[in-house]
Length: 441
Image (cartoon, rainbow, N blue to C red):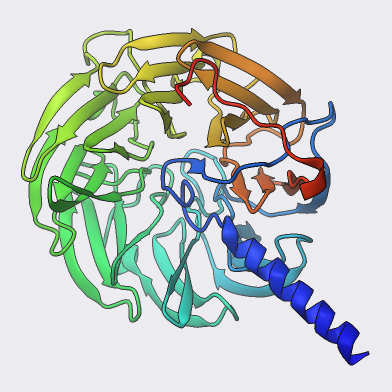
């Protein structure tokens, strides 16, 4: 019996280690660009889709799940409570739950649940979960137990105007600081806050032109560290140490009821950001204290190079692959050369398939979720696009939450269900591999 018990404990330890190997702990994943370095996962999907490990009901909200250290973190709303739940990533079984009250009602009739993906972060012996509510309240929890370590009602404390659809830019960690972008719909109502992650004390704050749904991004370029904040008025480059603004490029729609929502991307020394509502995309080469424009859309033109709405384009081998268009009926998928803005191709007619979908990239393939709930495995490259498999009706409209791939498991959610697909391949069976069509891999 002791030998058998030791063997079981050893197996459990190996499984836990495997669950940490390919975690997806924050918005846009471990690379913060919608990609995963996992390889060898199942690509020969049956017509009904990959095997399902679990399918469980969930409450309101658009926030994606986070997976880290053997826990799946789900943030959703039931009734007058918002719940941060830790689940077993293999079974969906509840491990712990943290609840906080919510009275948020969306001004435009959309979901009343949280928008922001929880952030899981470890520093030494402690691992945190940071959850930002639709009302702009920030909660810091202990990953292992769900115990509340600290909390701040940031929107109320700073008397910030509410944005169109509540607070929706996910927090990020930069060294010892937790960075949050909040604010309202009027010019001058925005605020970037940097908080000490261990205590919640405010280290610095910087004004912006208003709120957005674009998560900030930190990167080191040309010997300096930069914090890029895509707020309502455009792009600001801040010093992440103290919030000092280095430069700003105005980039916003002329339409009042509009938002900047797609997260900025950093590829080498190039910064890309984009919005719909007649705006379009911009690519900048960033320098220590300045920037130069590589290309940008013409605000006066109806034709845009790449105007992404809420889903962020995915960069692969010098190209951007992203959904363009404000409305479902006009949406298409495009490949754009990052350095020049040249459109390699447009995949049109997606309104009842992927619409304004969301994607992730891993192991030479794209996994796309359409807003009406269809799932697709795609191969995309500068030369064209190929559908490897389409699985219809996995979720229901609106399926606006991006897919998450963690440790060979694919997680999808809408406002009713959380589904886990098993993409793991037994070692003896091997795995189908491949590269995007026309790529240089």
